[in-house]
Amino acid sequence: MLEYDSEVRAIIDAEWERQSSVLRMIPSENIVSDDVLEALGSCFVNKYAEGYPSKRYYQGQENNDALERLACARACALFGAEHANVQSYSGSPANMAAYMALCEPGDRTVGLGLNSGGHLTHGWKVNFSGQLYEPHQIEVDRETERLDYDEVAKLCLEIRPKVLFIGTTSYSRAFDFARLREIADACGAYLVTDIAHVAGLVAAGAYPNPVPYADIVTMTVHKTLRGPRGGMILCKAAHAKALDRAVFPGIQGGPHMNQIAALAVALGEAARPEFKAYGHQIVKNAQHLAAALTARGLRIVSGGTDCHLMVVDLRAKSIDGKTAATALERAGIVCNFNAIPYDPNPPRHPSGIRLGTPSLTTRGFKEAEMERVADWIVGVLDAPDDEEKIARTASEIREFLKAYPYHHRAGA
Ligand SMILES: *Cc1c(COP(=O)(O)O)cnc(C)c1O
Image 1: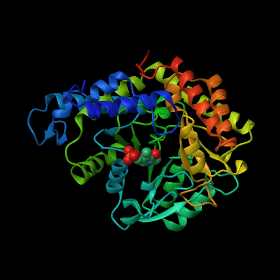
Image 2: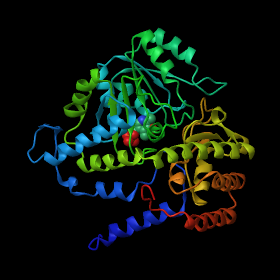
Image 3: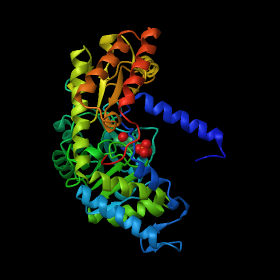
């Protein structure tokens, strides 16, 4: 492989070495199976397929059509959806398509604020969602750090948005999708739920499924769902036409068929019993880690987690999130700094870090390993300037990980 390009080969090898020798705790990352990788690197990378099955703008489509139909059928079966679109290049364009399918520029929207756990595409001012539409943001309750559904209802009745857009990048609590549907109905809004982070947990039955309640459900497929980088959209049959038109020709040209091949493989893997166990283990690991960190004197935003991620409030340790994340990285623990709700500190040096368990669970970590992980994390946070201890931690982790093979084969 890459015999003639030793420069790129060397960089790929270095990245494989890095990934396999550290605790990867960024909740939006995972480790795909060899089968997903193989499909992603297949000959579909060579093929154009603008349009939809049986309605393409290029010839030579019989295999593209079969592949896309298979991916859509697997998606609908896995999530219980009426319609699936598998062409979105990624999560952000999937969200753009949802807006385009349901509203006009200038329409009012309500989304979850960034510091409360929402995503840029839920109405943040520098994002298209904040510029093309009139965004209003909900924040979590100051005390509970959870959504107060009565407040959401009050705001929505006041604003009367066209779309209520709800999803998480760092909100660790399960959403009450039935209640959100009621709220949307009461104010005449469409409900879009963005399950980018939790899609795999939903597929595994380890997190509530919004598909029965939402007009449109968007997701990335490369986070807990453990597929290739990409997006996917599910919707009610009534929105199918508008949604497909929004994706193509509204936003995109030709779909990445190699990505769709890899997605089809990932959806097949996610339908297996082992994936159910995997999804539940991710959540058990996150809950165990949250409890272990709490027992060691740290505060978890909202008190815990119902999914794969948590935000840790570091103020008790007198260290900011950025300093913590860089010290942790030197120790072989890779996460990201993150704001806490109503963060008193600036975005570049917020008060928290965000941790997730999907990659570690793919490697085979269970509750017992989470105790070790908690010890390592707290050890670093207690002495972020002790470079000797940090180097010792990094080599301990490197040794420890040798028992947890990096390449993952589904079902193995
Ligand atoms: C990751 C994420 C996205 C964006 O996905 P990209 O593939 O990075 O564009 C959108 N919404 C939420 C909630 C996410 O977590």
